[in-house]
Amino acid sequence: MSAVLDGRTALVTGAGSGIGAAVARRLVADGAKVYAVDLAEDRVAPLAAHSDLVTPLGCDLSDLDAVEQLPTDVDILVNNAGRQHVSRLEEFDPEMFSNILRLMLESPFRLIRRSLPHMYARGWGRVVNISSAHGLRASPYKSAYVSAKHGLEGLSKVTALEGAEHGVTSNCINPAYVRTPLVEAQIADQARTHGISEDEVVTRIMLTPVAVKRLIEPAETAELAALLWGPASASITGTSLSQDGGWTAR
Image (cartoon, rainbow, N blue to C red; front, side, top):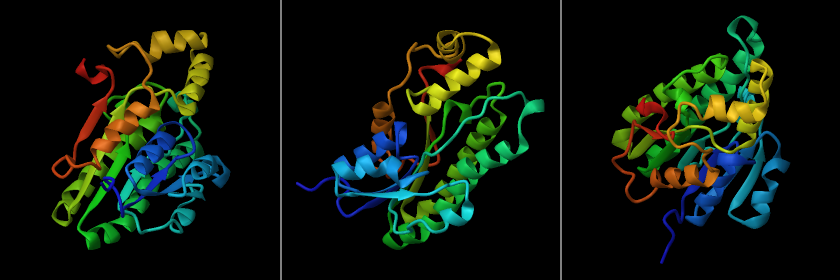
């Protein structure tokens, strides 16, 4: 019996840890060849060491010229790479703001733009954008991250509308706080910004808006992503799948 994704090729950004690594492993389990992209190749080398289906690639995705050198023979594109910076608007470094938007919005645009011709030619493609509850809601001190995620939501919907006639779907996944290095760094930043302990950041800030009082595990988000490239995915497009523990139910 063949795997779901035999003969398919995927590209995952931010694949060195957290959600990206979990998604890459799930794609391999479904039989896909995976270009695993992270800032440095050695960050994704462990994935390649465990499977000959994985090709590790180093790329600074905030360098848009470097993005243009990544492979285009992609059937499944997972835009996951991101970073966070916590600061009041009046103190937010403009270059940091620009860097985050290049990484989290312009880079996904470039990757989608470059992957669509291959998808269109095959009559099948899946774009999975790892957004956030912050793609649907805002929080103070995260102007660049919230702006980028809101922009990614719009980009995903346009991709869905243009790609539908070619067998291409595009969707966002919107998790609340996932147990990743990015979130761990946020905890430290928030503690400094608010002058409270890291434990208080988790209980008083991160988990306050959610009904399910725990961090999400990366493998849970990977399982939701698998729905979007699996057998039931053909008519799921242009949507945002909340995995937010009830955050947006309020």
